[in-house]
Amino acid sequence: MQGTDIPEFTLRASDVIAIGGAVVSLAGALIAAFIANEASRRLAIARSKAERRHFCLHLQQQFDSPEFFRCRFKAWQKLNKGDFTKPMRLSELLHGDHWTPEVSTIIHFFESLNRYCDEDLIDEELATKLFGRSYEMWWHGLIGHIVVDQAGEQYRDWLGSVQALHSRIVGAPNRATASIRLENGYTVS
Image 1 (cartoon, rainbow, N blue to C red):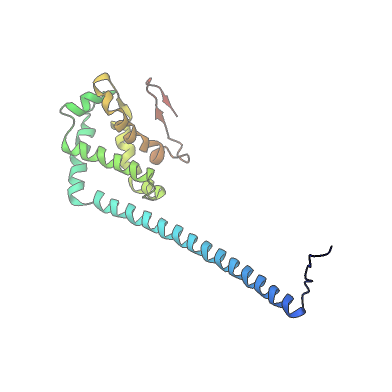
Image 2: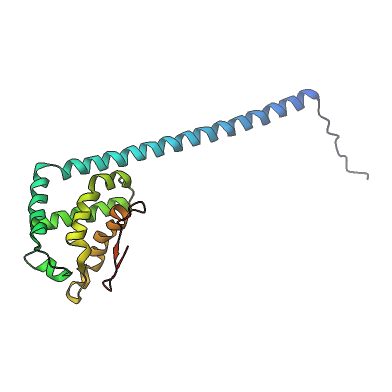
């Protein structure tokens, strides 16, 4: 082949050592980046868990505050007196004498608690320990016995978010007493 000269390429030992050094440096940089990324990820998880626990403890402080305690006590008195019929129609609850500011506050607290769990803002295990007993009391006294009637149909999703907390906190898989009330009135344990 005339007219095309292909230069010969030869590597000297110093060139091989320089290339080998560059490859080792690149591999070292990749390993260091991987380690830094993993450490950052683990720190973020730990920080996130600490933040979720802190927010949950902040909710407990609000829940146990004197104002909220008085509210809970007044609502509990209505619950304890048997003011709520079983089953309770949703429209009757929301538009009758049963829907007091105290009952509203308690129910909306549980709705918010479920939303915080959905958004992974609180530690569910800690929330179960802090609020599970109160929710279970309200579940058995009222929340678990609310049925959606035609007049309350527009509030079905809202009630669903309040009732969804049951499977998350009270109906946790490790609880033998978990039960779910179906729309047809049957209870599954």
